[in-house]
Length: 333
Image (cartoon, rainbow, N blue to C red; front, side, top):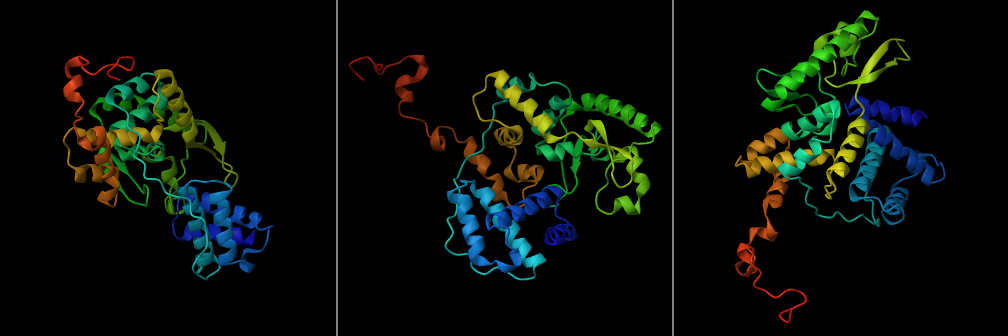
């Protein structure tokens, strides 16, 4: 337990996100249990290799999952135990397949959105209209949405980076009405003695009054409040991601779309449709917040239709809707 506490402290000192903290601690627990609850200070490269091989061969995890486990263990040994792991040899690495992102057509996006209601609809519209990740949308503060300039400002997004992206003009009126309802909810919480939002970093200590200010409230607050076990105050968190994920999955099924679409598919569709509309890849890179343009380049592959954009020679025979080639049951087959 002391090592877990030290791990959490090391992660927070380096400003890792809460989700990364939970993931790393979870991998450390799993690593220790895999080796019969041995003290990790007594283990090194051979034990790490066996654990990673187990994940790839027996647990059959994805390459990204195995890499996350390795990253957690490397962090633990370096920043908690104060020693670097040497060559982790002889492990069975999960193969990283090269896959193109799933992209919906504009018609399919429209079909899914028509099946959504309430906050789930508005969140999904922002994912597609602004190219946001799900947690980026759910952790938006009121101050981050500029209705006049039609901008959404992302603070400490993935990789602890800030960026600005576009706010669809068609959502201005809907967002204005939504924020008016959220403000009434917040004022009711304040009147009841609550209304405090969780603040980032040391702001809770440096500017405690900001927790009740309207600018720092969540754009998508949860319906239920929770009581802070330390301060004993009623607080309201943002909407949990599973609420939107389940609603989106139901909407995809109800629309009859057979693609394996998730909330993140809307971000892929945003980027692809911008490129199809003639915007340059550097602009799309800035809106998505990619550090390397090569990450954004994957959407150029999605744009290529028919392999590499090549026109099939069969189109000359099948063009115009008239089938010149014989069908499967004809002699020409």
